[in-house]
Image (tube, rainbow, N blue to C red; front, top):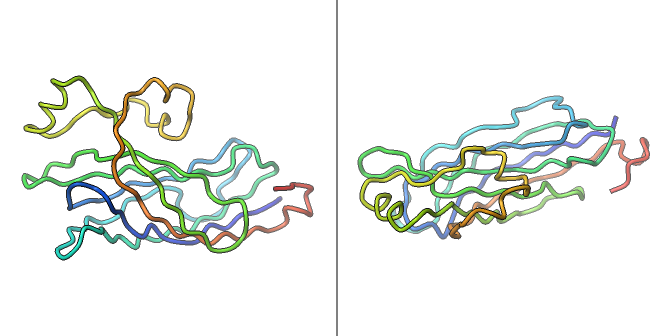
Length: 175
């Protein structure tokens, strides 16, 4: 079977309005893909930068998949959260990006967004925290019903991955 090794890190985030951020991440692959080794989801630590607006996580990613087809190529999805001064975690953004299809080292900027509600919801969120969240997290990386959402752009999550492909030509899989 053809194999892909994804080795890298979630470097951090920038362009978010507040600090004290952490990130939940996951890799979603189609039905023809099998996880051979590694974790396909995780969570970073909280970083509260003092001197600049860049949050650093340096969270490792090390995943090994095997496949018989390229359909359902792996996607990395992220959810960025913010801890407020009362210790409540608040969703700050969703985002996803495709894992590159070429071998080598790649730096990815994953733009994030969050759903917005009515003016009353935004007012409540400003004073009480919380805010609209997706009931079905699969909407992050599947475009089926995402076009119906009203969203606002948030910050950027910076990711660096090294891609190693093995046996794709041997099994007749062309990328």
